[in-house]
Length: 370
Image (tube, rainbow, N blue to C red; front, side, top):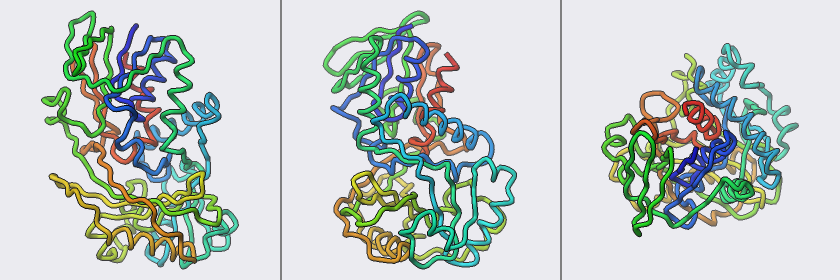
């Protein structure tokens, strides 16, 4: 079967890979020169630890296996099973972690609750102000600036894969036996099946379906620093991340003290990962109500920079880059939004901030449906 995949982000790229694995011929289309949206504007985290109990955690665990599979196929991809450390700075956050250790699926997440000395054994650079850490060795990271290129370069070795960029599809039509996609320039592409992976674009194609779907767009702000002169052997999260990720939804969560006003105002948590070049990627904020502001607000950046410095125990390097991004988020608890537009056309979006983590499992599930 010949399949068109529209979208060069991580969801589209993993769908292209999965379709090739299944023996299909794949035409992979991207409207820009390279993907420029949420797939390259994130942490590059494969974040199993905070997944919601049930199908979401199962998808996270499956995706973690698939990321290792992709790494074996593409050693240059720089998949790092570095784990994550979530730090508690007060007794209330520690109580949440202790209760999390009693969850039925704590063993699946491979959580370990560590005192400060044990945290520093795993990540010696963490010498700041905190009481304990929740260690998840399953969490991992990739390099978001190059992962898509690495995967596509590997797929291009397969004669059944064709990559076309700068192709903006503006019309899709079809019948029971074929589907046709037409670009803005008038070029036409035909296939047996079409997989549409639009990211946060809910209007350009199939807008009637997507605008009625239980999805919303979320804007975030992130930053990166100059090179840090120490190695952070794990990714890092603060206690506010337990408010955000549903994996930590335990009764003691309601006993957490109020968030810092800046964090509360901007719906913030601290996530931090050190890139392969030594720089630190740090975030993030969440803005839910459109129209989104176009300005970047400095106050959250300085708050996160100071917080990261306090947890690490020394002032981290200055901020070098600031950016924002918009992702698509399913709002009714599903892993993503799948719209079966026609018998041979499907649209997949809405994984929210879980896209990089869950993409391989989402793609695998889609291809099973074929």
